[in-house]
Length: 168
Image 1 (cartoon, rainbow, N blue to C red):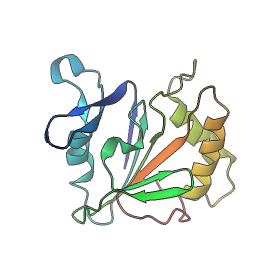
Image 2: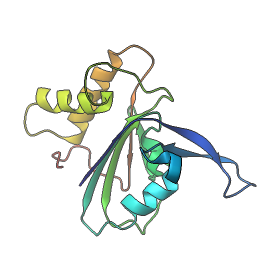
Image 3: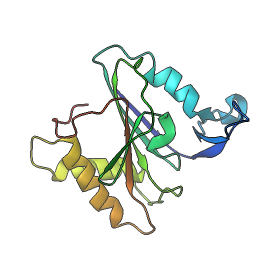
Image 4: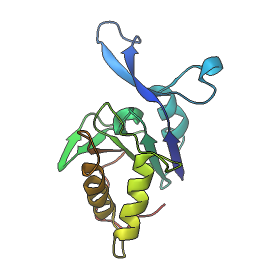
């Protein structure tokens, strides 16, 4: 399964726990004027939680939301793997790609976002079999050539083997 979002997003104060101020990530869908923004909590409940055991979901958040936008427990920024928390109730395997910076770069005349372009370019430039790690490395190289201080951020539902062959 693939979920792709290209558009506006950001962060807002999570009002659920006033004693522990945190930020919620959100995306702004086309119908936001009537439905409001979609928070990371809602996206998690709709996209991640219902996945069956063994199901795979790749999420590309081509916006300011970043890969933290699904609140997945494993967060990779550069060469570092940070475990933020562990949710054993998640049955499926989820990989989410986003920008580490709060500013998503703008690229004109693509018809889609920079992350999608980086993913397409990296898969096309890789020798088979393409692994998650090789795709992410090439995406980071591509993004690094763009103006601004951007980098790839990846979050995962489980500590996935990044050297496994890429599957969509």
